[in-house]
Length: 509
Image (cartoon, rainbow, N blue to C red; front, side):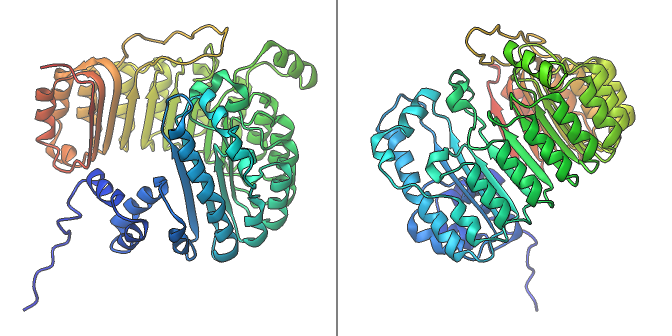
């Protein structure tokens, strides 16, 4: 008689965050072995390995057979310059060049390379650490050695990497274009550490200019994805070169690049008709930049005005994901008319994410009518009301991911006026949660953050949703809401399929 084999082991029945904690306590080699046990452990193991910072030279042979390599180093201290931060950076500098040298000579199957420095250190401390004498004496490793040997590379991501650490400059990216003409994904820049806004030298990435983008545009005609994150030396000319030569782009991401004009963004939307993902954080402009661009390009002061949105709607009907954030602007720019135009022309949208946009209820009513395939919606400090939520819940029957976030305090540049939040406490109330329970039958993830208008009454409304709907909910996040633990328990008792739960700042019982 053949013994019954359960479809899921007791280990796999554990929540994902518990499995991640278990994997984090394993050595790198043991964690890599666990990745071979099942598809679920493989996915979790990759997440754990990607953010692991304590690695050693003994782990390098594990890289040889990989096609997708992600190396991330974390500097988590937020204190003043001291031995803790320096020790972390020194350890990373000891390992990273050796790992990359090993990759260059041994990883024959390398196709994707991602390097990210995840830093929460303040701007002043970061600058002081990188200027430490012990670092300046160390020999620099030029990252271009990797793509000189690994010409099959088709994806490169470089985030928060100091240029002098790996010799990043226009020459290295021109070499990338020469040796890797099959490059399809290119991402470079800085992100996170918003407090470094006070120090432009640290806030903006200056490792790349228009010359490098021109080389990529001329030789890498298969580029499908370009992501420029706070690139202070990239101008509209470089972006225009990409638009003219890489018309097959499917993903375009531009975050706070102050020298890029609206005209160049319009050219991307005019020529790249296959765009499926657009993610833009308009930059903050100065009076000098306004006058210069007006004289040279003849365009207005904003990167994402109505002209750009109208061009997107007219030329990119296959757009799937649209993300717009005005977190770096001191006043609202993107208006409801421009967004309505995009919704009219791009009816295949499956994900929409707005951050700090001043949207009218009419935008969400149009969204409910025209984006019926919508599966993910993120509304962060964007005037999302109960009426708007009810319209989306009724019209977008495939909605599976919903994130609503209230306003937060934002850092501004010295001398700039603080942009006021659209609302003081959040717009969605318990009435809106009742609409979710009644109409969002495909919901698997619900996130509500910084909203004191949500109480136990709204959570009780969610608990009244059909049992089948509650059982398919996999992720629930409630942060800074007026809910009590007793009220949330009523909902949790019915969510048997819940895999992730985050509760912060709950109201006292």
